[in-house]
Length: 312
Image (cartoon, rainbow, N blue to C red; front, side, top):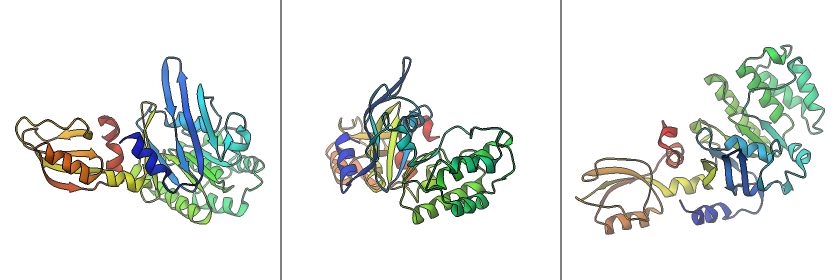
């Protein structure tokens, strides 16, 4: 999918961005974690950022919160430069980090929640109580004795209870059993219905957030290769079943995403990126016969842009 298509689809009808980066780059020694990333998260969107392990997703989120410094480029949250206004940015964000570490291991859950609430004038105590009950937080347990799942649930309470205008959630259901995952996603949906919120979320479980997502970004090896509204992604990424003549060669400008299946001299089934009418015309003009075109679920459309091993 071309940058032109990405930009046209993303900017269409968008007035303001909750998150905006320009040329954001981060290196760790010789390794490039992010390379000139221009991310745009529309205000009020649920933006799902996808990518294989090591693609740069967690690094991008840390740079947005000024938890790490970029080597070059600019990151803004609600118009605030994250380098010069880090505390003001973090005051408007509910953050669930990738790591299952709530800190303050000697505190009880109750004491840590009191400690965190003191930093947020907008902390909603009645809402916090609702979350504590729904997520079955064990108030008197010390942080150092919590399991991975217990810690994640506590982190979710701390992220949601002050009803921030931006939620930054890095694998928020990681470490949770299926029942609790479902409960968390229900709470998140209810939160979005009750509170005007922009959400930037990374996840390996795309199907879990499919009903919430309205924008999708895909990082591959530190580069943002796609960022579009979900409807645009699903409209322009389709499965084509085609019949190929002997010696057929694909047009050079045809973007075939993901693994190619089927023998090249017989029937093939490929995921191809582009406007359906234009793709079909290119295939037909090249001598191929289009037998069928089908839409894809969000997960399959997104995974077409990731390395083959990421889709398995």
